[in-house]
Length: 194
Image 1 (tube, one colour):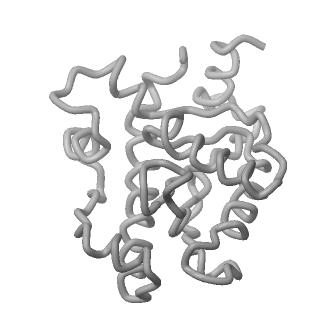
Image 2 (cartoon, helix red, strand yellow):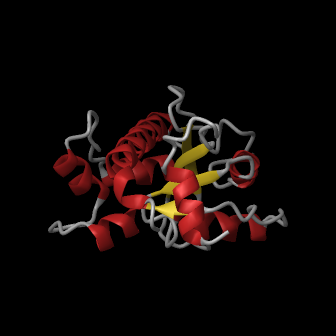
Image 3 (tube, helix red, strand yellow):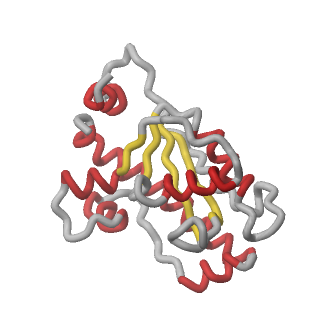
């Protein structure tokens, strides 16, 4: 169908004849903005309406060291590929290209062509705020949770295998995913025609 039809199917779930689609929210935390210079430290994800937030780190998924994110991206791809729709923030320009680059490096299949919604685009083109950052949108919309700052030193320490710093990065990622879902719920009425 058309994008509008897909949007209506995704976001207008008032029709109880159709089951709620499986919408996956996700976020990555990495050591660099470029995949060839960086490593994915953790990937957070959750399903719409489900309480559990999954945030495995590269050390949780059997990586051989603090640079080996192969198993992490492979595991996430297997989850991503089961979604009806996916949702992130600035994800079309950062998270997804980063993940795709890593999968390609490791000789893994590309992500399935699952319809994706980047809420950054919704904020940029449908709202008029002084900033399109997730923290700004979340604060303006009055979500229950708020993004928390993270010290740059924590990223640096996590990048060299510091487990305490990696736990802090993981906590930050988990909260980002929770806030992402809450912002999605608030923005849902604006999304149907995307």
